[in-house]
Image 1: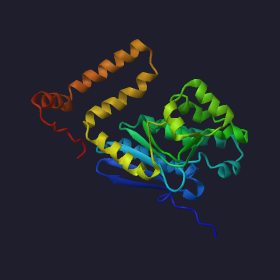
Image 2 (image 1 turned 45 degrees about the horizontal axis):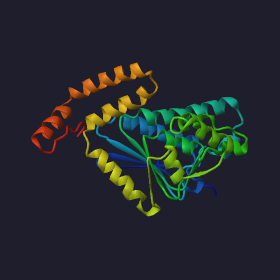
Image 3 (image 1 turned 90 degrees about the vertical axis):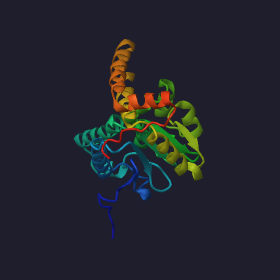
Image 4 (image 1 turned 180 degrees about the horizontal axis):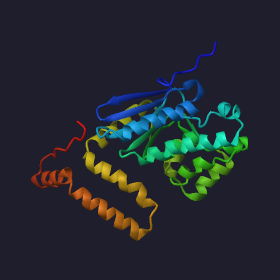
Length: 266
């Protein structure tokens, strides 16, 4: 008898302090992004975006690998162009929702992160990889150029490095991914959980308002002309200066005491 996972357990969620941990839970399928997985991710990301109490998100994968991309068996079972267009639109919505979340998103990567799995890593604000992590956009090896993963990948690494990965389909290791900018940190496999926990703790120690202001401006300004980016960033910074936390933080610094941040939603 074949057993299929329910929508409730295909994506695990754990709330700890002000952080949300999302875990892709298809370990026997290397956590591929099936239609059900994409739908579950979208629901959780929409919920998190509307919750002022959440201050950080971690996305990880259960088992030996982070995510092997789209579910190829599911794709081949539906040989229809309209189906594929909607599938890739759904995946693109998930990736853009990660970028648009008002709080930092950390990818916790062990083992394989390929194709749309590599795209998910590239879409996160930070990514910490275990030494075992391997990355590829290898659709080219089965006759499919990873066009949508290319969008996120090429916004992390240089154009020539991205195209080399896309057109050759080769794997790179964690240290290479770090050097190219796909990862923000590398640690041993045994220390991965601790390294991610340390990063979460570091983010949670900062002003919630300042972090949200920062996330709201960082990605949009990268797409702007220089003068427009400065104008936009200056307006965001002026608004940030009017917040409780900026006043409290500066006063605390001048008084040589620890600041007491505002805790929205708590």
